[in-house]
Length: 188
Image (cartoon, rainbow, N blue to C red; front, side, top):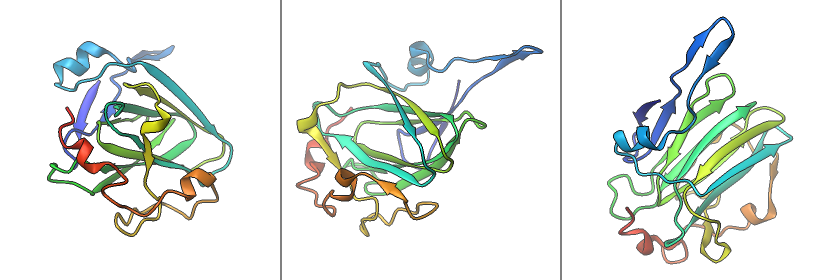
């Protein structure tokens, strides 16, 4: 795997190192040793899979508060999606900035999302399937979210969403107290 830093410290795009021949190729999707050697902490306790039937489906912007704060490694395995992360670590030089990237079945890129980041994506094709590794168990009481259209962050989505859950539409506008920003001060 090749790890490429994003403009947000601690977040990376990950490129598979394919070993191929006339049959196709083989590549590691995850190797804890390679992550450790790159100085990127990650242990996986869940593997999630989502399928979105329509292009323009928006899922996000989700995260969990400590002690259930999550690391995610996201890959699109069918179709294409535009993935966005937002830095919510109050001591970070990039606090409240965001980064977006297209993940697709063609480019096979992955996105490493550190603890203290909100995460969401919009599908760019029908029947888009995402696969992601997660470092913490889902804890409903620790779940929070950002509005996909909150002017505080001014996220630039590739199009207007055509399908978004009621829960994701209902997140409040950014408020540091509700969003638990102070609780993320000492995330490792």
